[in-house]
Image (cartoon, rainbow, N blue to C red; front, side, top):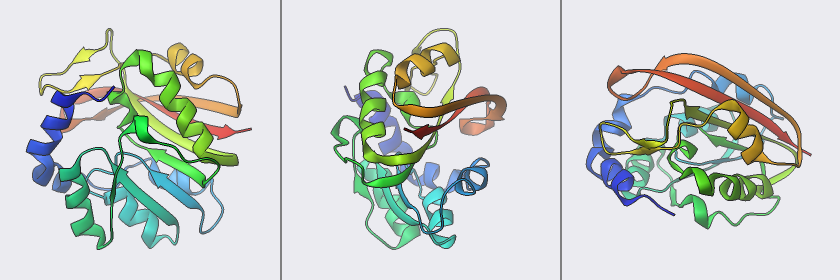
Length: 193
């Protein structure tokens, strides 16, 4: 299920990637939906910028990344362990109040996304919140940097999430991606039943 060329990209670019981005613009809005000191699983933490902001705001965060190289970069920033975790290895059950998956589940092969989202849903406690963002596009495939993208549309994401959610909200916007290239995004916020 893992895409080795995508992992290879992040291994090569880890040091640069870890310093390229500031905290996600959507993070504060998501955190405002959570109870104080909520336990948050961050998937694909990259350089740790979002985990750093969540920790500073008093949340109990478990940062993870599928790239050992990026996990090491995040550890430098956070001064704490960052777990190397591939999406297919998620096996938590009811352990978190929230899952923050900013710009990472977009690398899951489209046929595998429903199963991965099922694992993410099981990791949440009842009423727990999920945030995930995805680039949009016409057809899944490889970008100019060699990374795989699933490029879903809203209907696909709703189907992939499946049952068991109290609400699913999907917002579209334009924002720069890697190297400030323009991109269209879908932002999913969902609450577990």
